[in-house]
Amino acid sequence: MREEELVDIKFRLYDGSDMGPFQYSSASTIDMLKQRVVSDWPKGKTIIPKEASEVKLISAGKVLENTKTVGQCKMPFGDVGGGDTIMHVVVQSSLAKKRAEKKLDDSPRKVVCSCSVL
Image (cartoon, rainbow, N blue to C red):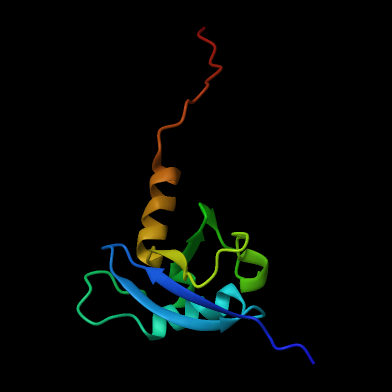
């Protein structure tokens, strides 16, 4: 039976600090990683995610989808081994999302009026 591949992942936070490295199986989902980030979030940070939906993970310039596995997101680096995969963590609170959506809703719109003057 083939041994399951393990991947070392570091999470790079907004202030440049890192969490990890942590080992994950290649079958772990991105949603599982997000939940780990939220549960292990360092104390004393000014921005703190409350739930996994507030976290986006970025690897190789791509926002990773919750349903993808670590194995599907791992970038092939040829024969170079021993390095950690670094995923950048972006936190957007639910309140910030609502504000951004509200700004879009409140943006000025061009109104066309077809009025006739008698």
